[in-house]
Amino acid sequence: MLEDLFSKSVSKRLYVGPLEPSLNSFAALLLERGYARPNVKDKIRFVARLSKWLHQQHLEVNDLNDQLIDQFIKRKGRKGPVRRGDIATLRLLFKHLGCANPPAPVVDENYIRHRIEKGFAQYLSQERGLSPAALANYIPMVRRFLSDRFNESTIRIDRLCPRDVTTFLLSYTKTAKRRTAKLMVTSLRSFFRYLRMRGEIAIDVAEFIPTVSDWRLSDLPKSLEPQQVACLLSACDQSSKVGQRDYTVLLLLARLGLRAGEVAAMNLDDINWEAGELVICGKGPRKDRLPIPCDVGEALVAYLQHGRPVCSTRRVFIRARAPHQGFSSSVAVCDIVRRALVRANLHPPCKGAHLLRHSLAVHMLQKGASLGEIGELLRHASQTTTEIYTKVDMAALRSLSQPWPGGVA
Image (cartoon, rainbow, N blue to C red; front, side):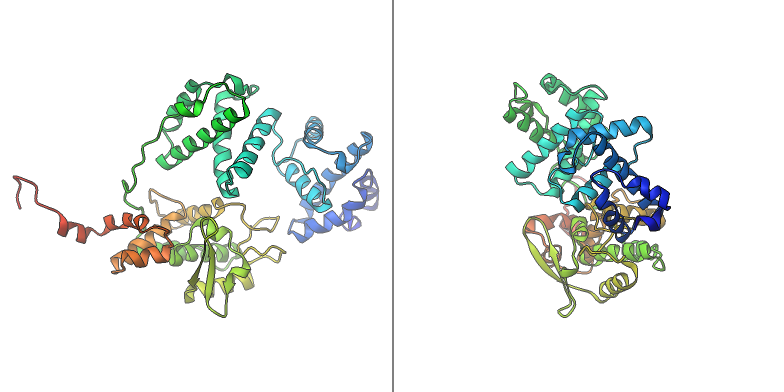
């Protein structure tokens, strides 16, 4: 395999160290995952350098841990630039080899910072039972707080005090949306409870974290008009593979009101073509079945036959760039919506995937659907969740309004 990528003299220099027997199979794996040949060559060179370094240090592959990986990356940085995908390459290599100690997803100059985040993630997952999607929301919030408080200096958890948190939140909430600010508050409370439980702080800082006001049903649901939704869908170039994928994603959001995470997690096994149904893995362990509308079915068929890359994963929607695998989170689906809004020259106040879910509900209400029917399609666990859409029925609300005392009736 390497002889197909490099000249014989270069290939001979690459075969050094304990990773030598795996270079050919790893190169084949990279090509199978859709990486371009120049990228494969760069990654093989990087792995070969690691193999040579292991040989010089008299180490085997199973001896590697986070500290040694960090040491190798820092050494490489002195001899040349550290590429963004180097750690991802190592993780893929270790998974390919079946090693017990894969490197950490991020190697930061501040090793303490990574260890804190890793311990907090384990606490959320093992002690509190949070899902990977929840961890993807909590960890970046804590990382932002630590970066703001300590900047590039060494983190000293024992020096954190309530004033640090309130100062940060007062600054953060000036520009953040209320829901995002609430998530930051929730994340920091969990983080400081974790630190208190571990005995790393002397006082319960979580008690001093202020609450962000966000009264239920206080806002009107943000939505698009039906013609705007049609404009959004038509902005996708269905002659390209990415356009086919984005069009299908937007159609699922607009016709079935799916959540971004539900679209990202959809598998090929969730599509029952004979029954014309989709199995939707909703919040928690809940699973629902929804009928596949004709236009959604046609878009799915076109994407699966002509737009979806050939790969081993069972995910329906695949990244456009290598490695060809499913979306890592719901953020990718929200990004598809944002890019489509830009192409369609639409500028609503809310630009996430939930915009199309709200638009579907509002359109159904305007067409005479009941709240029960809307809640059933959107799969709300409680009818009170659907009540927010009562505020967009202006005609019904005007009939209930009373004249202002002393004013004109």
